[in-house]
Image (cartoon, rainbow, N blue to C red; front, side, top):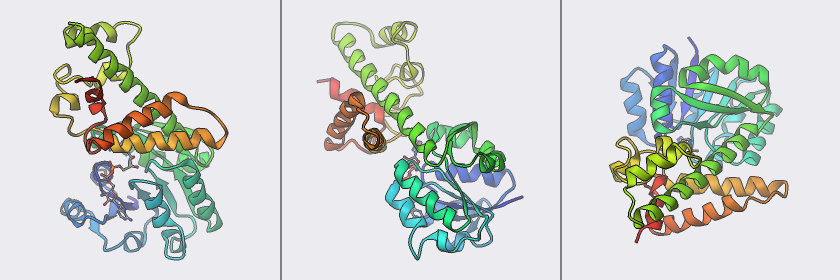
Length: 294
Ligand code: NAD
């Protein structure tokens, strides 16, 4: 039984923390939203009054926050958590943030003898609830081995991507491919349907042909084609369009860091920004379908 501080109990963090709790670990939890803390406290976690309170006595600290600025705000600076953690504490930072931001937290952690891994996830809220997330991890392989039993309670694929920040690089590469596939699928669905095809028939033909891809397998953006997809539930649940836009922005920064060009990612980012301007940022990212329908 390990004492774990879990900070950030949003759409992803709450179900991830719940899986650790159910496995019998002692959880000290904190979020700015008191209701989320209270919900887990009712299930047996210890409600903390602040992030600093949450980490008292914790051997492992896990964070699942929205973006780079939240993570840097939590860990860095005189009032940041790194200043008060014991040397040897293991930090599993699971948010999706800029690789450079993750590396700056890694550097600060090393200076204090704190072991950190950047460990962003893929698999969405359903994967978080089912404990089937994919973890893409950057950092020392010895720490990955040490943390593996904890990751395995929340995920089924645990990848060591490489050194500090590598998990975040893998994550933005993956999400850029996902966005481009989603847009290409939405564009083709709209074109086929406008030309008289039945959406379900078109989706099945492409799925079984050379255009087949993850979005056609699991996440068709056309309403009614896949009962379980967010498109069939008014584009609710799933992965918010504004988070996809954030990830595409991180992908552009990552490409530019070493002078790479990523034109497909750049176009995908522009299309998602158009969607956000239409006020659709809080809906599932497959709502990009609506850009192609008059
Ligand atoms: P969310 O907005 O639902 O949750 C973030 C939580 O962090 C909120 O509850 C917020 O109150 C809390 N928070 C922010 N600052 C805090 C602080 N200083 N101290 C304590 N709590 C704080 O977001 P989410 O959907 O859970 O996503 C979290 C991360 O996971 C993001 O980086 C996102 O890109 C990534 N991600 C999300 C999904 C998804 O499907 N939602 C999938 C993969 C990865």
